[in-house]
Length: 190
Length: 190
DNA sequence: GTCTATAAACAGATAGAC
DNA sequence: GTCTATCTGTTTATAGAC
Image 1: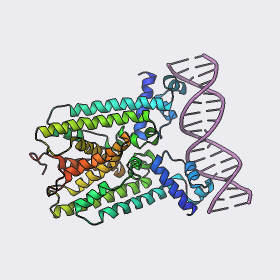
Image 2 (image 1 turned 135 degrees about the vertical axis):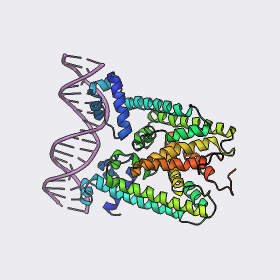
Image 3 (image 1 turned 180 degrees about the vertical axis):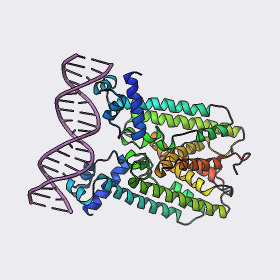
Image 4 (image 1 turned 90 degrees about the vertical axis):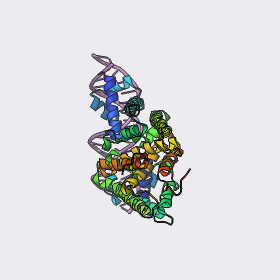
């Protein structure tokens, strides 16, 4: 792996663990096994390196989600698959957590990939919900965009509950609650 | 206001704006208009002051929530009232955001008030959901604890969506989505 | 109680040798 | 391209004057 690549990977890890404000160039360099010079040769500075790292994480997250959402199954099944997919719950969402970082939110450049990723996810889910409505799986009165927003919010908020309590099961409880409300009448959970 | 009190208030503001990692004693002292000596006289250090600030914020948040949840109205109405109450959405949740702070999560002492507050809220909502079930407002098959977890998660995740996009409406969309699923059959939204 | 002085370590970046 | 100085300011805390 190239030095540039090692720097990006180390930054991704640290942004996930400690956020932007909590991550120092020194920590990145130590983890990457590189010196100051390498970082400032390949990147303009901490914000530039962080941007590259966030973009990379955003790409991967999108690909992972698409793997489930674009897979086989009915719309409801794909949504369940997305909500139930294996997650390192206590580590939180590497993209969503950046919204609590003051320096990320203060920078339109750093915020952009975060916004685009969550927006894409919401739109992708909205389309699936609407597909489910056309198939008679979900009530026709529902608003696809709003249901999608509720789904994404439940996931992001689930991380909050899990990290607060230290229990991954807190995440699952929220997901089960949402799914029990969303469950197609033809296949009730109870 | 006493110096000790000004220190706590300044810390509360900064923890909300920038989190624990992003808040320095220096910034607290400047905002409180106090010197180093005052802080180390009244508190053992940054973690001790932060703990006092977090506890205070937790108390207030609980009181605010109880004001709506313990107020008049049917269970469904009180839940709607809680979800729709005025919020500084783009500022995020002063308690929930701390779960993304590595130093808060790493400390059982700092995490405790965060955990207790969200846990209290979840239990309070669970009781209200169960009350609604007894009144025939909600489907009897639902699990109160899980629905409560979904409600809290939707709020916490709503902040994430709003801050990512810079639009408070993103929060509202998620809330509307959840409420449309939760709406009692006797009073549909559509 | 509150202030300033001092201090060791860190943050973030630049300069220039190799 | 990568490295090691070097540099300015910050972080977190202690010491001691007032």
